[in-house]
Image (cartoon, rainbow over all chains, first blue to last red; front, side, top):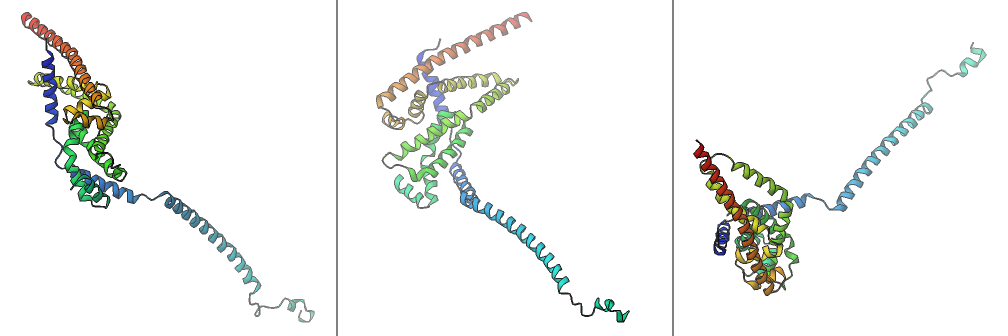
Length: 104
Length: 200
C-alpha cells in the first residue's frame, strides 16, 4: 500500500519531468515569422468598402459594355439607312426616262 | 529595458523588441502551458497563438495591471481554449499510443509501466476542477507566489492556498484509486503468468 508521501513524490517527480521539457530554441523566430505571415495576409485582404467599390466597378463596366454594344448596333442601322438616302444616284438612269413616251 | 518601455517600442513599430519580449517570457509561459497541456508539440503551437494574441492586443494593454499578470491570463485562456478544441484529437492520440504500446518489444512492459504512471498523474491533474488545476499548475510548475497566483486568478491569497490544498488532496485520492487498481491488475497478470508456467 502506498503512503501519502509516495504519492507526493510521484507527483513531484512527474512535475520535474515536465518542467525539464524546454521549448524549441527557435520558437521566437517561428513566432516572429508567423506574425510577418499574418501581416502579409492582412495586406492582401481589402476592406469591405473596397470590395463593394470593386464589385460596383465590374457591374458598371459590364453595363457600359452592353450599352456601347447596343449603341453601335443602332448607329449601324442608321448609317445603312443614310447610305440609301444619300446614295449618289447621279449616274443612274432616271426613272422618268422610261415614263416619257417620247423615249419609248 | 523595462516591460513598458519594450511595449512602447513595439507599438512604435520596432519588432525586434517584440522578439526580445518573447525571449524574456517564453520559458515562464512555456512551463505553465506544458503544465496544462502535458504535450510539447501542443504547447509550442499554443505558445505561437499566445504571442500572436499578445502582439495584436498589445495596444489594448491596461497599464494599471502588471504585464506578467496579463500575459499569464492570455496564456491560461489560450491553453484552456486549445484543450476544449482538441478534446477529440487528444482522445485519438491516446488511442494511438495504446495500440503502439501493444506491440511485442522487449522493453514494452517497462515503458508501458512508466508511461502509464505518467498518464495516470496526467489524467489526475487534468481531472481536477478548473480553478484547482490552475492554482496547482501556477504554484507547482511555475513556482509563483500565492500573491501572484491570486492576482492572475483574480481571487484572494487565502483562496489560492485552499485551492492548492484541495488540489493536492484530490490528486492523492485519484492516484490512490488509480494506482491501487493498477497494482491489482499487475498482481492478477503475474498470477496468470505463474499459472501458465506451472501448466507447461
